[in-house]
Image (cartoon, rainbow, N blue to C red; front, side):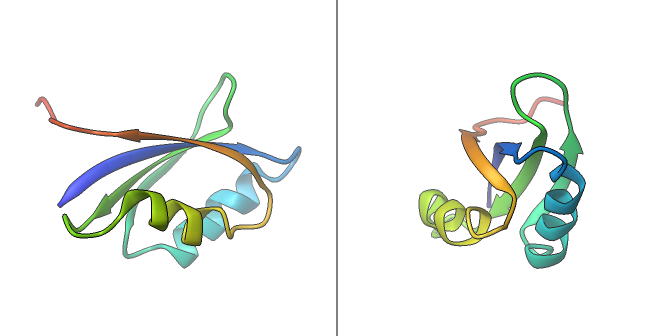
Length: 81
């Protein structure tokens, strides 16, 4: 399994709708979605199988959500606890 994070910029007033849609539609892959301050509106943590393509997943599933204007994907390598 591999983890990655996607920062999401939403259309004005759509952040809560986008967050709900991400959780509802991608519930088997999305671990958490947070509202954040700064340049982006949301950040979500996604977990994929090692053989799944991150770019294809974001393209086909995340970008398909209405209200998303832009994304920035971060691949996580190691978790420190």
